[in-house]
Image 1: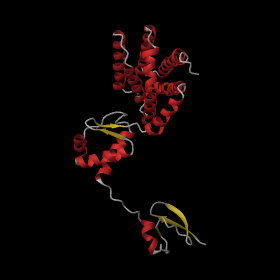
Image 2: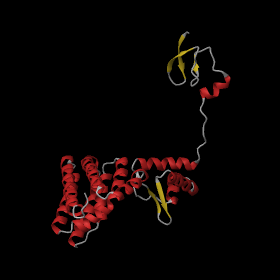
Image 3: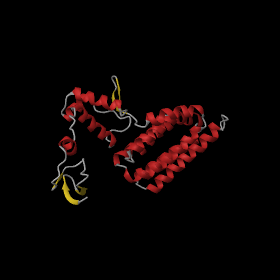
Image 4: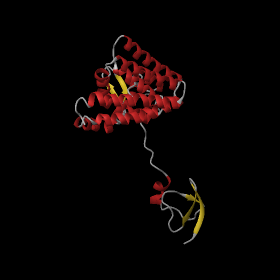
Length: 281
């Protein structure tokens, strides 16, 4: 066996003249690849890509980069067609491709929104698990706390001004509701999701969205049946303001501490007043 240093199409490598690789064609060699293997050795078959697939690739990239967030509506099909310089049928086919992949969801008359990519693999199976054992909602709330404490710290470092402004907007809504003796748990959820989005970690936002969907009923129950005392409601508002101010000031230590205090309070009160009262162990 003789060894020869040869320059290949892609790199410099050592090959055996007795066992020439079938994956590359190397120059500087007298030995030629057999004609029946030459096409496979030198070239890869080029698959023609439809225009709709190119559109789908761009949309998929925008979603994976967080340009369009979970639950956010895409521009209309005519708008997308104009932005990309393609026909509406190409846009429609691209959306159908991503719907099959579970990334988009179209509602008749309601446009197309970004789906939670973790919904099918996490939310659906977990729902039946929680239905079997109500006490596990506390376990899920503890997991949520671990995730959100990290998120608050991260958001304090990575947030943009407009994201902090949105947090403030939700906080103002919550304070206005408090003054009018109204509770809207969905505003609470939006505040926390804005904190999650400010981490700019797309995978995390999909995961935490699944957690929030699972415990939405618990949050609603807690805000409407557990935290009825005005002092509790006032304290929860103070918690949210502390989280917001720490993130606004880009102070990760304060943000982490404020979120941990808030969620520890929620878990303890929820457990003591609701779960124990219901006799769940």
